Length: 377
Image (cartoon, rainbow, N blue to C red; front, side):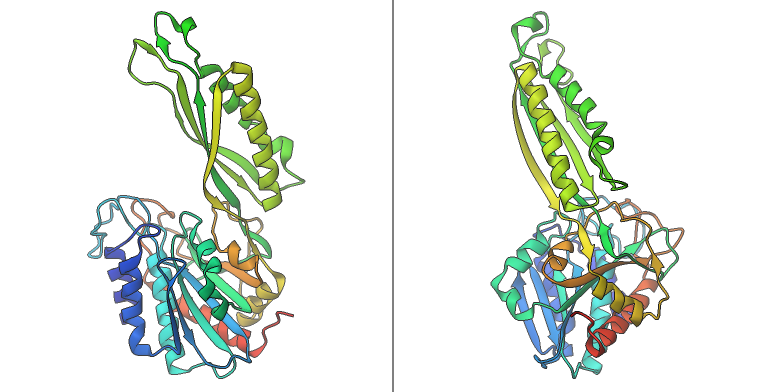
C-alpha cells in the first residue's frame, strides 16, 4: 500500500477543479502504465480516463468508478501533503478514491480476469454533476459500457471500513436554482418612483418554507435550502431594482424533484407577477438521484457475506453516479472513514490513508463475485 498512499498524497498536493483535471488524469496514467492494462481510453467525457483489465468479451464487464476533481475550498490542514494550489483542495476524498482504484489496478495486473473484463473509470467533474453525463455521452463509452457498475464514497462519522448499502435511492437528487428579479431602481428618498423586488423576494422565500409538507409523497425526503440572497448593499441613497435568490432543491426521487421544480417555479412566477417585476430562472449543478438496483446490491451482499450496514434512508448529498445506474445495473455504497473524522467539504478534512487497503479489498471481493456470478439478469 505504500505506493498507493504516496500517490494519494501526491494527488492531494496537486488538486484540480471540475473539468480541469488534465494533470490529475496524467498522474493516474503514469501510475498505471507499468501495470500494462489491456486497453486504455483517454479523454473520456473530457479529462476522464478508463483502464481495462481482461480481454474476454464473452464474460461480463464490471466497471469500478472514482472521481478526479477537487473542490474550491481553502484547506487549513498542516500535513506534509497539504494542497499547493491556493483555494483548491481534495476536501471530499476523491484523492483517496483514486488511490483505491490504483491499488485495485495493481491487484488486477497480478491476477488478470480470465472471465470477463474489469474497467477502472476515473471520471471528471463529479462535483458539478456534469462529468458522468459527459462520459456516458462520449462515443468511446460504448466499447467499455458495463454489465455492472460500482462506486464508493468515504463517509466520515462511520466506523473505519464499514460498508453502507441501500437498495433504491442511495443519494438524493439535487439542483441549484438561481432566481433573478428585476424591477427598477430609484432614489432612496423617493422609492415610490422605482419598482422594488423586495416584496416578491420576501414572499418567494416564505413560499419555499412549506414545500416539503405540501409535495412529499408519504415519507419522501424533500426540502429547499436557501443558500444565498442578494439585494442592494451599503448604498443608502439608492433603493435597489434587482435581486438574486440562490436555493438548493433536494429530493429523494427524480419524480419528486420534478414536482418540486414545478411547484417552486409556479410560486416564483406568481409572486413576481403580482409584484410587477421581471423574473429569470436558471439551474446549475443538476444531479439526478443515485438509485441502486437490487441485483447489484445483492452482489455486494454476497461478496461481503452480509457484513454490511443497511442505511435507513438515503444520504442527503448528491452524486452523479446515478447516470450509470439509469443505463443498467449498478450500486453505489458508503465506506466508513472513521468516527472522529472532520466531515466532507470541511476545510480540515483529509482522507484517511488506512482506508485505501480496505477499499481495495472490498472492491476486489465485488469484482470476484461479479465475474463469478453476475446476478444481473
